Length: 354
Ligand code: ADP
Image 1 (spheres, rainbow, N blue to C red):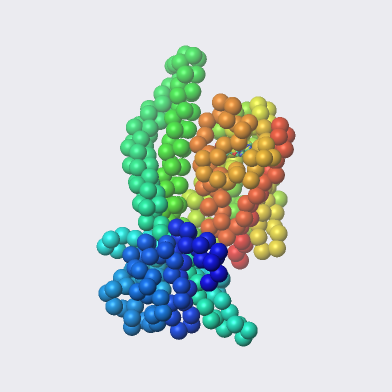
Image 2 (cartoon, rainbow, N blue to C red):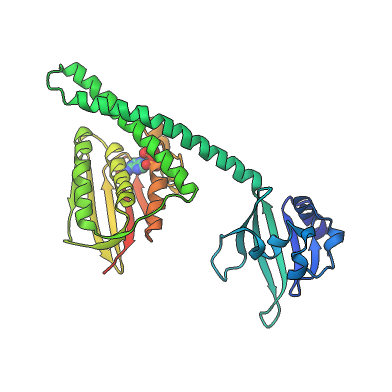
């Protein structure tokens, strides 16, 4: 191998293995030697057949070359895509490797060489897991007292005998406790998404009826913010396959944002139309808008736009991350248009069902 290339590959932290179509190991860099605790000289030139791989000397290497030998394998790329990417998880001791396999083809498009790039993800995944566990425990602990406070304030709100200033204080407290509960629930949902535990129970629903009910609930909040909320119901019925709780969470988030990032006396209009095999739902507001430079990051976790950070509107920056996940899991797409100080339009699609 060319010396420059050899030096370049040699300094990689990631592991690199090259073998031919008879599993003859041709190249093994320093990264793999350290990661898999094997010396290159013991393996280069060896034909790493399935029989050889089953010997106990190669406990770490075998499941990387033959992923079927690993206790757990998670495919991260589509079938037939190049490179093929898999996550290989080993037990006792726990190890997690991301393995990318690329093929070198001959003139007849037959693979002659296989190149594997290996990243050790063990530490990163342990850190992520302990972060998720911490968030889950903290959020669960906070949810019980926050629910109790919310419930007490909700009851107090109903008391007609209270004077106006006490009532106003209770309203402020009630809104804050509602925000707190939303942030706690968003955190729990985000952890579930990241751990792949945010499951969906799909059923056929009439989206028009579904939106009608959601808008009715959102009217109360819109009234508090002095925002006019309308449903431009151009269709009687549109059927989609959805998890009503999850989709409800996504749409309520979009409507809540359109209301809370609006101006007093502003407007929010929800409408829908059919486009080929999809229904497109539009949430249009006359609010503060989103700066152009912030738009590309708007669906990322914890992101809040510059114009909002300065304002007093509470939020966690988790809502749109959840919304995008939910819409994508329903087979749809989401995007937006916005003009600062004019308003924003969020669009999402869902596949139609008969
Ligand atoms: P949160 O509202 O809790 O901050 P979201 O993830 O729902 O979190 O929204 C992320 C950010 O996107 C908001 O903080 C705000 O800057 C911006 N945003 C979302 N919807 C709108 C909207 N309709 N109008 C203006 N800005 C919006």
